Length: 270
Picture (cartoon, rainbow, N blue to C red):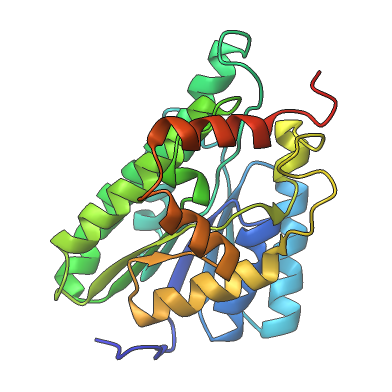
């Protein structure tokens, strides 16, 4: 079993949503430290370009799997492919996820069900299938992308905030179950981060984002990676984010929800 922060040669890290943002930055860190990589994403061209870059820069062995994680069979197909190739996953990074912005009564149901599958079910399913082997080896690390959104309700992104609350709760519970086993589970809870996330959610004009200086993906990834190596259960990058997350414990829930509603609304109120 590795000690804190140690890396074994030939260790394999599986990263979902690995072609941009925090997932890509985590892939770079893992490759830098000698991991072989299995990268999962929806877009083959982008996935191949990232894999080639990581091979060139770090000399990593990189396997790519093109899957849309919103599809119910995706996780089973990924794990079947790994087992056929005799690949044992030592580090699982459940990074893939996205948001949908707008009043719940007006957002598209099928889009939100797909988001729930990616943000919650994929995390649960991959962890369920890969964790038992980690426990048998007494060796493994799991990093799940939650969010500061996990700490309070989120009007105008109601379902997204709820999915991240699930990821945080799930991660904390499983982390406690496996304590002392040689396997650790970490929930990374960043605030707004410079990625393609805001554009995909069409929320660039919200007060939460517009005109604000937000953390970059590399800084967030480094904080999450360091916390994972130390076996921390929850990592909240940035002092301001940590203060706000902690403050939610002491403020009335209704008041916090109203504040979030105001912050998420568009600057022009439209």
